[in-house]
Image (cartoon, rainbow, N blue to C red; front, side, top):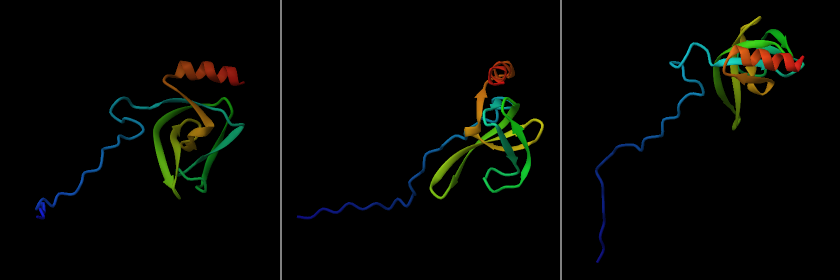
Length: 112
């Protein structure tokens, strides 16, 4: 005796909802960052070969407006959109992120 079960339901399996790295409704900016690299180029787009908008030096404080995971060639890199002396993108590995400006100022003083 053979029993077959069939379904007529053609619904596709739903994929999980993954929230963005930053939550845009929580506040105007994500936080503040302190540059940890000697100097780093601020880029026009979140990719290594983008045009340079200028550069920031170690100990510079920048306001972080957005965090984003960029997927390329199977790898994922975290980037941050900053406002400061230049507006643009930095790789997150080159800065330390703080919740508020006073924490960032204290950290910047310790780096100088």
